[in-house]
Amino acid sequence: MSRNYQSRKRVLVTGGAGFLGSHLIDRLLDRGDEVVCVDNLFTGAKRNIDHLHGNPRFEFLRHDVCFPLYVEVDEIYNLACPASPIHYQYDPVQTTKTSVIGAINMLGLAKRLKCKVFQASTSEVYGDPHVHPQKEDYWGNVNPIGIRSCYDEGKRCAETLFFDYHRQMNLDVKVVRIFNTYGPRMHPADGRVVSNFIMQALKGEPITLYGDGSQTRSFCFVDDLIEGFLRLMDSEPGFAGPVNIGNPNEFTIRELAELVIELTGSSSTLDYRPLPQDDPMQRKPDISLAQSKLGWEPTVQLREGLQRTIDYFREFAA
Ligand code: NAD
Ligand code: UDP
Ligand code: UDP
Image (cartoon, rainbow, N blue to C red; front, side, top):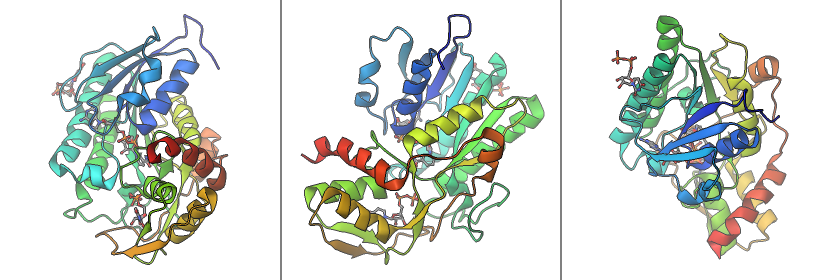
């Protein structure tokens, strides 16, 4: 779909120099929108948006969402927040501030502009879940004082703010709960399982398996996720979510390691390490709400998505 001049929108993407944000911006520009990208470059990288400089419909603002922002836009996607455990645990207080104060500022901006505002929430709001697979009406099992809490509770509080602005100010909000997503432009050193395993396999280093590798995750390829974002933003007025977006095919972490070794043709061995505190044992989205409300489901399966991600990572491992 491409837009003509009259239907063109100005869209703000916070966290736009990050992994997911930069893919979202590509899709928005492809369909003809103008994009204002806001990022403080904490975990994002200029290389993710380098190809956009010179595009007259793209603008970059180096800015921290913890501070007020006065811009004029038609829609807001709020993605700014470090997302991998090593990044969000580097400065946990800043992580909570980014989620909570960042949400307040983006909601205040949306209130002034009377525009739609989208929040990138997370499957982490379910914590170490007792219900499997996770549906949106499950309230979760989250430790409020552990090492993951700055992220989990920050994102939960952001959801609360989104729904209170929705109820109290009648704001049109859209909240997505993102399950583990991977693909090109993931940070090669962010410590997440897909980037770690691929980098280790490409370098022929041991693959670090935490615990016995029997914990599960469900991995979504980035292109599928972004399609879900766009459908949610364009969904019927009043539909706020939260809605799970993720790939329901569940794998153990050991299976993932074996698949990465196979696809890279690596001689890496498995190196078992202790399981980090509060590491969820299983995670798998129930996506029936996304299917019925957005007509969305993933199309890229793990083998194909991993191959595309491995191709991207080769230059970093060289
Ligand atoms: P990322 O780290 O690549 O991107 C986050 C971006 O936010 C970075 O560019 C970073 O520099 C920016 N940022 C951080 N703090 C900021 C601040 N205070 N002000 C302005 N910019 C700031 O991570 P990602 O994987 O692209 O994640 C994007 C969003 O999606 C995050 O909100 C994350 O919590 C959420 N999410 C991602 C996943 C996943 O699997 N990738 C899963 C669940 C939720
Ligand atoms: N805000 C902003 N840009 C705007 C409007 C508001 O960054 O265009 C911030 C503002 O700094 C405020 C926050 O959003 O702290 C919440 O705004 P809201 O109007 O809800 O609250 P109030 O200003 O009444 O505290
Ligand atoms: N993991 C692992 N080895 C690594 C990195 C992660 O075994 O080198 C495990 C981690 O303990 C967790 C799973 O892989 O059980 C997913 O970790 P990630 O940090 O990617 O995401 P999250 O735990 O936030 O879902």
